[in-house]
Length: 194
Image (cartoon, rainbow, N blue to C red):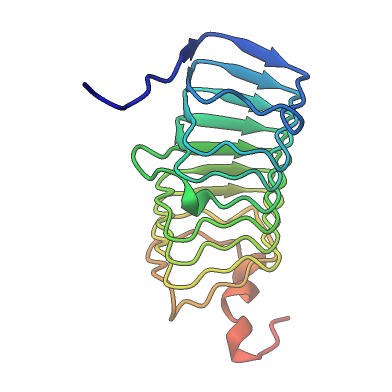
C-alpha cells in the first residue's frame, strides 16, 4: 500500500479576482487554466504543478516556489517581485513573460533556452549560470541584472537597455546587441563611449 497522496487534477478552469494571499491555492495539478487578476503575493505555491497555464494581471510577488512545476507557462502584465524561479522543479521548466515586473527575482542556474522576455522590468534579476541560449529580451530594462558564467549564445538584446554584461565572464557567441547598447559590454573597462 502506497503512502503517496493523489493530488487533484484541475483542467480548463478560469480563476478570476481571487485573493490567494489569504487562503492558499489548493495543491494539485493545474492544466490549461487561466488565472486573471489573482493575488498570490507571499503565498505558498510549492509542489503545485502548472502546465500550459496563463497568468494575466496577477501578483505573485514573494510567493514560495519550492519544487513548483511551470511547464509552458505564460505570464502577462504580472507583478513577480523577488521570486526564486531557481527553486522550481527544473523538469520541463518553460516560461514566457510579457509586460511583467520581475525585479529582484532569481533564475540562478535555470534553463531558459528560447525564453521570451517582452517589455519586462528585469531590474536586479539574477541570471548567474543560467542558460539563455536564443532567449529574446524585447524592449526590456535590465538595470542591475547579473550575468555571471551565463550562456548567452544567440540571445537577442538589441531592443533592450541598461544591461551590463562582461564578455569575459559569459559565453556570448552570436548574441545580438544594438550599437547603442554596446556600452553595456564595455562597463568593466571603465572607458567612455561617445
